[in-house]
Image (cartoon, rainbow, N blue to C red):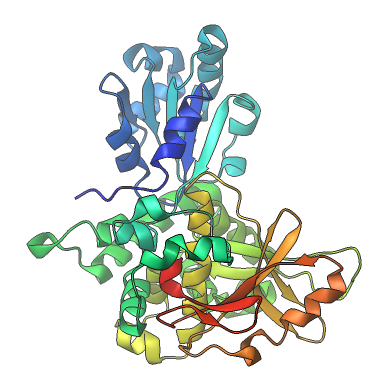
Length: 409
């Protein structure tokens, strides 16, 4: 079963604007399935997961394109950067739109040669796992999330998500394989994540970093997963994994490059120097995070020590998808000063700051937004905001701030 993706219109649009389209994202989020579903019948498909194809691409790139002429869909382009100069040559010679559709399991700026070879010639989209609306078969309702009344009105048809529903989705995760198979073909969750971790360690990690011991790296990634929703403290993670802080920073960049984690930056303003510099760490897929931290069921996860942090992680991931899955930059930040006054998320649009708290509660109140007033020191326009939580309907907290059901994301 194929679940329609919110990003489809953006792919058509970018393909009509650029000679090359690049869809990046973690393994198994549906990049290939998506593009094959959208492919014109005459577009050739070739996978660089195939060793024979990689050998041809590396040793005879010109011959490669005689065998697989454009328009072409090339899967996992990072395995053969030797193709990039030839792709540039084709583009400059023919100047047609949509000649090359590419996928890659690393972010654009980590792919050797792409930024230099295809600058100005490639449109880039970041694809993550399924969003909540895609899982619920409502992809057409997706738009960049902003906590305003204008956004709330079309969200009135959103599905109510109660505690049990939310933690089932969090524990299951967002990989399409977990949601597109049913009956006797239903994917075994633990088996899927076990295989995913092994594949990830054996392929992407070895490509991105010189890691001799996958056992130590697994210990590292488990330590990272246990800290989702918290300030990034590389020294603590390094100590847990038994590695140096320099190694931990390098490995963290590997997780970020391959779409496993997302780092939210603190909001900086020239008026104040009170904001700390550390980023906030989020594991993008909550199912993988729950697997690595060994929660055996949605019920134990919901009742356990990570319950609040992983709910916050889920919300941030959904908001991130609402931007990336329509080809937009996600203007997400957080606030924390030296007095330890925190605001979970700031969405900044048109120089207006929209503050958001994320709480595992069904009854948000003014206490939950007590730190919003600290934003006044920034001397910026403060827009509408609120508390994203487990309420089943919009709850006015003040004239400006609202309790927002998680189902509205």
